[in-house]
Image (tube, rainbow, N blue to C red; front, side):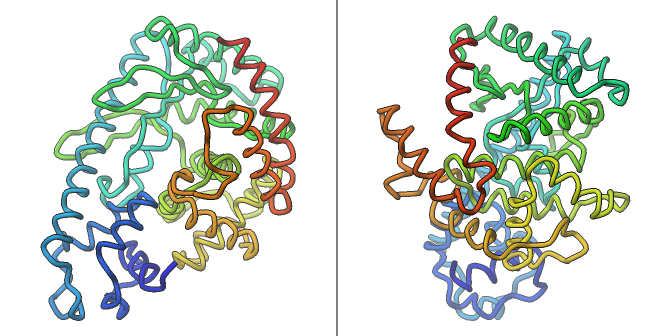
Length: 394
């Protein structure tokens, strides 16, 4: 990544208080292409459009964006405001809908992450992901400490069947996968209904992860929040801070090992870490938690990027960093962009042949094997298991 880009990202994040000298070297149209690839245009547009009015003519060092550049960034920023506003409204509407039908709901990722940003509309909005549990099952989780791991997983499995059956009343041919099912579309937003927030390939780690999700579910489904975008206030539940940290790490891990990950997810984690509550658990707790869930290595890779690229203050960092893993993660981010959509390497491009796609997936597993062996070595096993799971839930 160009040093000028890194400097500008740091300034946009608020890490640096002064405009970097390297601003004079930036080609604004090329930076726009980079921001689109990484889905961080909203973050940079707020600075380029000088919305806060803090940048003087001298600060641009003779490289003030021309009108065409400004128009390009302005159109994108305005579109993001509309998309984020729609995502917030849909999040509330879908939550209300499930509430009426006897389900508790919790909004994952997306607009919930926007709340950690200084300005919610800065974040590039995607689909609406909602985690759903039947209310009678959620009531059982209020005293989760009295339940064994096995009982928690039995409750989760019961939720899976009920949620799939409910969603197919509205979308009969909706495809279900291990953790979510496609649902309706509102205001142009695809809705994915989760019965499991996420998953891991490694069967032992995945079991621990699902137990963790269920033990913390009750707090998340009662963590009411609100967000205001374009003068419209929307209310819904979102995960607790700790849950969100674990969930986002897992989300990054999944996309890294399966297709690719973009810089937007690192920005999400940056703002999340900066928003850590003062009474959060100590580092020893997170050391134990990350080891138990199998997320230690991806956490160390993320912390390297937080330290080297975003210059995150050490007091916000959860664990030590790992340069070797961090450089790999950054390399994959820069090559593939958001969700690996820009990755042109032969073993990453999807084709119409499922056989070819399976071969390419295995090649990616081999590439990452020496970095994340405990997760990638189990990917072919999980892929086979998932195939039969989907056949069962067609």
